[in-house]
Amino acid sequence: MAQKVGIKQIAEQCGVSKTAVSMVLNNRAGVSDSTRERIRRTIGELGYRPNQAARRLGRGGTTGSKSGMLGFLAFDRWADSGHSYYGQVLAGASLHAQELGVGLTYHQVIDPTDAPPDSVDIEALDGLLVTGKPTLGFIEAMRKRSAPIVVVSPSTPHIQADSVRPENIESAWVATRHLIELGHTQIGYLGGQSFNADAQERHFGYRLAMQEAGLEVDDDRSVFTDFSPEGGEQGMRELIERGHPMTAVFAGGDYLALGAYDAAHHAGLSIPGDLSIVGFDDIEPVRYLRPALTTVHIDLRAVGARAVDRLMQLITADQSPLRIRVPGELVLRDSTAPV
Image (cartoon, rainbow, N blue to C red):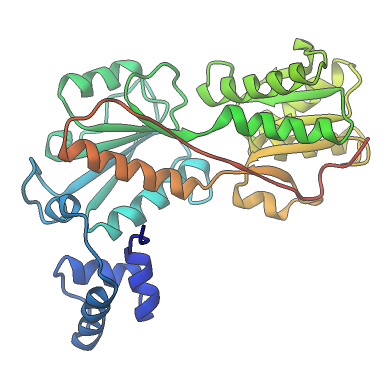
């Protein structure tokens, strides 16, 4: 089967940006005549076939489109930080929407119990991406309006809606298994809030790897806090103060690992000499840790892009709910070592 040609291939062939290709596909100004002609010629040569539903939506056209605009609603205080977890998801969603010729508007809700801000005209949007900690009441209200909605890496568990999130259980199993294969048997777990869906799944993957290896799963070696460096520092300190022998820790989030590094340093523990640490997410700040952090890489921009694709499908046709998982990949660096 021939490989499907996309905007990326056209842009690379022409030596232009994907934005320029998108502008030509949607007959928008801002591209010189010579570049426009080169892009059109390449489109013909490569046999590109655009997503017609996306193009209709981008022009505010048929298929029930209202405005050619999607909404990205983040129930999270730090979602607009470029290097944050949700900031990377937003970047991926925004870029992919632009490639499809569809608009995307961003709004932030600081308090999860609040309704969307008055500036969000949900009725005028073709569909909504929701991330962070939305209330179940908000999701249900959107469903009653029959508003196309995709929930992206929600912290809130048991949401009945289309969703896109990392493959947490398998990735956590792989991370823990890495420590076990290095000879570690006394492995702690540092996770986000116990009610957080990602934290629950990552803890389950950790426990599964331990049990399959015939190792004791001691609840005193698990601490749940919040996904922040402060939470990681406090949680790591608590694990140390409990006094249980421990040679390794799986931190179910890189921000937790940042704090764990600090707590280990103040306790006089060397990494990885005294304590091996594995993180999760592979966010940009961990590149500056020393030693460099072994972690599970999740392509957060791909999470955002997949969410846009799924939302487009829901806008153009009624479909059964789908739960999409984006796989992780263990990145070996310098924070783990054999016992």
